[in-house]
Image (cartoon, rainbow, N blue to C red; front, side, top):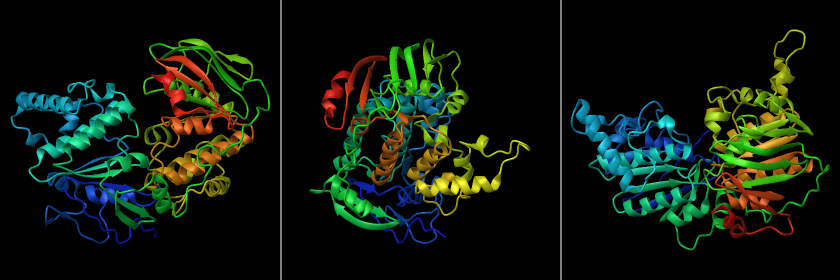
Length: 492
């Protein structure tokens, strides 16, 4: 039996922002689940506003003023924004029938206005919103819950900025500052600079135990890293790779004059063997859609895709996989994982065609067990068993399983869209080492990421997109890395 938490105690008061940090698998998500009621602990008590609280009962905890924003979104796409914001709390909005709907819509509009969220209408369908916009609705839902209670509210923010642009992050931070006098916050993030900026106190978890609780005074992110993982951050954390010369000048894959209506236009981009190409740009610049085009997940409206010197009239995900162009998309839970299926199945699904008998068409189970075990061990996937549903693993271990899936077959190009989103610093080091190792073996890598530090540190050259067009191409050899300012000036 694996214990996710061991004798964890914490307290937070109105006016405080408690920063909760730790590696993936440290127990942060489990602790947030306990506090929000979605996880019932084996032992322990919870006190809210001086009175015992019902553990394992999210509805009653919500009524006591506890609300949560989690990284994996839980909105109902077929409902409108205002319906999602007040879902399950409609009775707290006075009136019935059309009157109640009108009052909810008005209240949601006022809340969005107070949060300075100007590009989301209260009556918009959630299905029509972008992923970052839906994240803002999740945040608005938590703040609405705080407004509806007559008790001092507690808002749990679990990786709330993982999908937000820099502007949207600043909106959230200003909102926390404005509400702090009337709300207690617990803030979870792998972006240590954000935790240090917002928090009044810090709680560090490691292997399910509290390592330290300390005031946020004179603490550096390097010190937090050491507390989290039990070692200092390696000096080559971001920038320690050697420049790799391409084994061939010919691209493995390239987009020529690529255009996707309303997203990007006239993009030329090639990926060569052993090369890491970074794509930088703000949210909405077209970088994610460009990555999806390379992987066959989206189609071009104009232009062409050329693979190994041959123009491809059809380019889909099956074509890409067959040609060794493999994809790690940004929304892990929605696009990469079968959360109720075992870890083993989530890994082997990437190479089922390679372990199926040619004669019977049946899966060779012994081969599957052996191969997935080797891959999970190689990538240090922490799990009680490969039969464990992958949804029970931490985000970092889920992501390592996704990488393991593609290492089970020949990889010529790895297309990565924000591969370390919501992942702790220790696991990032492992993934960076893996990416560099694959490039050293001749794999071409196309890397899109929100973190400029990540792109600059890993890439050999950087393509900057602005409003869907190539604004610059910047060399980034190990001996002459550009600064973030050098890249940002082409993005804005």
